[in-house]
Amino acid sequence: MSNVPNELKYTKSHEWVRTQTDGSVTVGITDHAQELLGDMVFIELPETEANYTAGDECAVVESVKAASDVYSPITGEVIAINEELADTPEIVNQDAFDTGWLFKMQPEDPGEIDELMDAEAYAELIAEEEH
Amino acid sequence: MHDTHTPLIFEHSRPGRVNNTHTQRNTASVNTIPDTLLRKTPPRLPEVSEMDAVRHYTRLSQKNFSIDTHFYPLGSCTMKHNPRACNTLAMLPGFLGRHPLSPEQHGQGYLSCMWDLQEILKDVTGMTAVSLTPMAGAQGEFAGVAMIRAYHDANNDTTRSEILVPDAAHGTNPATATMCGYATKEIPTDANGDVDVDALKAVVGPQTAGIMLTNPSTLGVFDRRIKEIAEIVHDAGGLLYYDGANLNAILGKVKPGDMGFDVIHMNLHKTFSTPHGGGGPGAGPVGVSERLKPFMPIPVVGKNDDGYYWLTEKDLPQTIGRLSTFMGNAGVLLRAYIYALLLGREGMTRVADYATLNANYLMAKLNQAGFDMALPERRATHEFILTLKRQAKEQGVTAMDFAKRLLDYGFHAPTTYFPLIVPECLLIEPTESESKETLDAFVEAMVAIQKEAESDAETLKGAPYTMPMRRLDDVKAARELDLRYKTDNNQ
Image 1: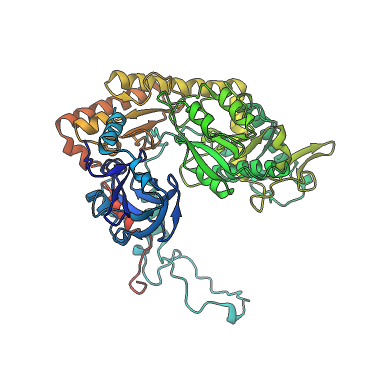
Image 2 (image 1 turned 90 degrees about the vertical axis):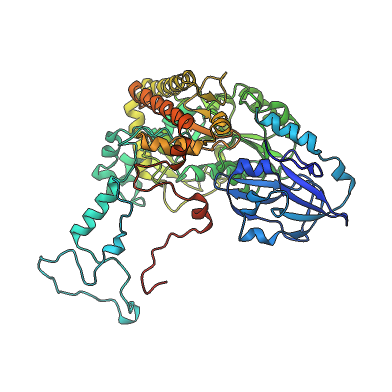
């Protein structure tokens, strides 16, 4: 069973969202997602200052098995990307919830974050998928 | 078979070595190219004797793991037997020597074959017209969606911006939609392997240009609600595209035209007797319904009282245009034509019967042997999906470990990790060419590997052991792609 930290919010498409004290959010893909994808070989990140609507494709994670789109979990502007991933995409495999983050966003409506799944709901979702 | 390093042809090279060491040296020179146009340094080509070259390439050919030497159940790729007669006849001197731009009256024989092939493919697919010109499957797809765009444009219906694609689709489908300027909307698959019709209803609308479907799908099952899907998309004003990459299961049984499709491409290099998997050339003809006929890519073979001729812009002013300089891959089209004649109507039906029987037999045997199927309740078409999710959990072995170990047992691995929506999957396509004995031997190998997984998983993780190369480091290969040979003075 994959690790599902309690303090994060989740999407059905396996992104996680962490709210920072300044109101911005950090986004990554879950441990479950990296486990399914396998060893990462390339990660394409959005450009900073790009604006996305919740559900937009905004990044691509490519592993030895497949290339998968990453969807923006909320509506807002990209304010930072994880530059480390260009040379060492494997951090996503090693530490999906922390140093393997993908990008940071400034949400347009912070209320949108509350509508995402909590850890319990996400754990249920992946348990269902494993059946 | 077990040398780990075969030198490159460049490594055999010795300065000044030539292939005619002992024959007479011909020193006559007829060089009329001006000095200013001649290169100053010779090209860096390998300098080897004829013997070196022959041995080198023969050795490489012996490393082939191919349909001619092994069972090759690579799902979605249709590694079936291609009768040698098809190739022999396609290589008749009259075909080989014919220049594609020679006058039509000099090529009536070839043109008549292509006309007949168009007619046969129309009949097989139930479409109104066929253009043979696309050079490969991906180009056929491009032509198909370009026609959908041309159709909407011709109707001044320019607000349609989306192509619907099921999540089980070939990766080329969304790529094609993007190439034609459409956004892709993904449709989920339901638990039974059919397109989720409720989800389809939710996203279809005035922005829908069309849907791209493979039926049978990449899950190896026939979508039972295809009529309903066609109706939903047509009612919204969209068109239906049939990805006919593989027709093995439906030949002579069911026609995409009857299912309501407006356009289809066919990979003749899968179903119609061109060896596949070697990187080409292929042929991806497109078939169209009445409403897309004006937009077909040119040239198309026409026929009048004087004989056969090429239809051009004059005959099809609304055509999406040419896809290449010439008229399609003549050799591949000829093999397809000859194959179709060899089979006849009766043989085509038999291809579908045996492709389906072999897949279902193999699926049932593997199921009895304890393997899990992705869709156990469904009848397979020409291929089926086995999932090793349980083994991954219980024994820690993956689909890739099974695939690599199969090589040691003398079988090419099935397709792994496709379609993406089934975890730890093997997509297995035995094709109509294989005997019961071969299929049984494959099941035995799978059972033996399962026993190894239970008793000695480490063995599996190190496989293959008997191939010229051991397991490659996929991650390193993808991250540090290095395909070029470097000589000492060319770093």
